[in-house]
Amino acid sequence: MAKYIFEARDICKSYGVVHALKGVSIGIGEGEVHAIIGENGAGKSTLMSIFCGKLRPTSGTLHRNGEQVSFGRPLDAQKAGISIAPQEINLVPDLTVAENIMLGAHETSAIAINWKKTWEQAIQHLLEIDESIDARSKVFRLSKAQQQLVQIARAAATSARILILDEPTATLTSRETDKLFDYIRRFRAGGGAVFYISHRLDEILELSDTITVLRDGAYVGELDPKATTKEEMVRQMAGRVVGRGNPAPHVGIEKRDVVLKVDGLTRLGEFENVSFEVHRGEILGVSGLVGAGRTEVAKCIFGLTQADAGTVELFGEPFANRSPLDCIAKGLVYLPEERKQEGIFPLLSITENMSMPSLDRFGGVLHMRTSDMLREVDGFIQRLRIKLSSPSDPITSLSGGNQQKVIIGRWLMRNARVLIMDEPTRGIDVAAKFEIQAELRRFTDKEGLSIVFISSELEEVLDVSDRIVVMHEGKVKGIPTAASATQESLLQLAMS
Image (cartoon, rainbow, N blue to C red):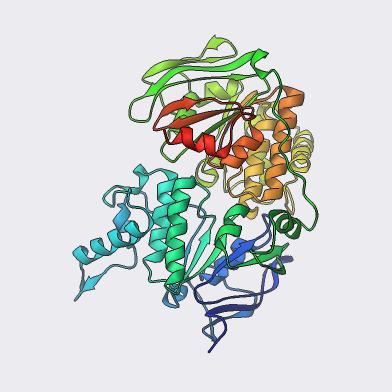
């Protein structure tokens, strides 16, 4: 009997002269949760794409129950009992939840789809993950967190015995994460196996049986979650000791000028009577459970939606009838949660993506001052430590975390004065997260930048913020200082 139910041996993947994977060998046993960790660009997603049939390895072999297999497409992997719930949402928005879950896995009767059995199967898989989602709802009406849970249910609906979960809790809060962990434990107890990718090291230590570390496309080693520490995991991932990026909160922040004032902001069905102030040089965290209304408030302030009541003041002046263009012109910028759908221009280069809002600054008499633009772009690439081959490469050549850094650099380059950042470090590794936090703090300290920092990670909100707006079901439940708050107190407010 084979030691592993699935094994990769000496897997290499090259794109021309770029080696994304360099001889990686890894296996998983029945009833095992095997965590894969590494910095952005370490090769985690490339390896998982090979496991689920989205990519073919340049060399190396895959083995299922000791027998060599080859996957030319995702369906081949599914037939071998392997399915993936990717980090980026990949659902059909105009279909219902049930239709998405059973897409490609419909129950059939004779030559037709048996919709009754298909519907029953969809509900069964959904209830295994989360009982609060309406199976009849169209996917586009769900929150990003709910869509992520539906995506996991769809992966399970393929009768998979090996699940690949890529950053499954990135959009989830503690309550939804607990439900997912319960499901994973039941799946493991039934003999299923899980490859689990996450930058949340606490989750890795709590859930996994084995931890494999990748760095720069190569296998570094295996760690025992019962014997290792977060510090050792970070050191193995980075190949160096990484310092934390959580400096002490600013002192006397309440005495500084108010740059953004939100008073009684209401949008029916989304949020009600939301009020807070942001001071010059302050990082104001925004926390809350899924459905709290955090993103909806941010989009309304930025003018993507219109409020039914309430006012917004920017730099002491009323700011009514806002549009995103008006906000950007006045120095108020919103970085969206979904970078691939709303944040990047996938057909353009890294340089073009970063410089897009600032092109007017580089206009010459007869032509663009391209050299000046490239010099400034390169400066932000260095400061944010963006890993790339060339600034002229397409932005899609970067890992998700490095794409996010480009978006952050875009607005720092535009000299934004107030940044509303929605889950800005989602999908970014620990070392890069600390670097970004330190860079944001440097901009608040040295240049008076003010930031509204929305995050589902309570630890991150506490690390980076001066004060924290806690929301629940569209209402503000409190605004404690980060120094006086704990994860437990924030969660208690968020559930009250």
